[in-house]
Length: 91
Image (cartoon, rainbow, N blue to C red; front, side, top):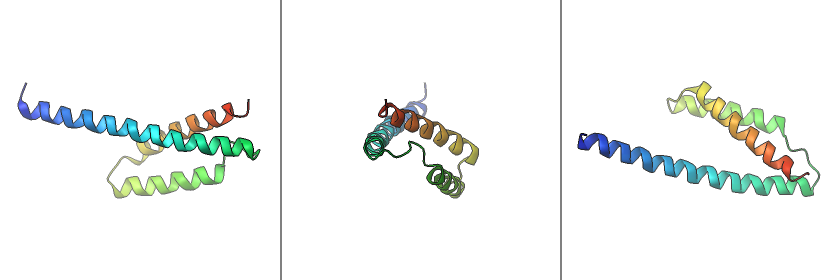
């Protein structure tokens, strides 16, 4: 196995760990949002915010040279998980 390939794979592993850490942080914050919404009897879904966020993410993905459809699919999955978590506080 070439050393350069091993080095690149190690970099990928480090980035993957960072992505997981960032996701964990995001879900910690969204859990606080979910608890607050439940306490205030607010809807788990804010469709206006979600649509605004997706538009912004699409623009930012394009600016960074990323596949916009992929970024939107990824964040829609994240949003769906957040909503599901928020609804758990209402049960």
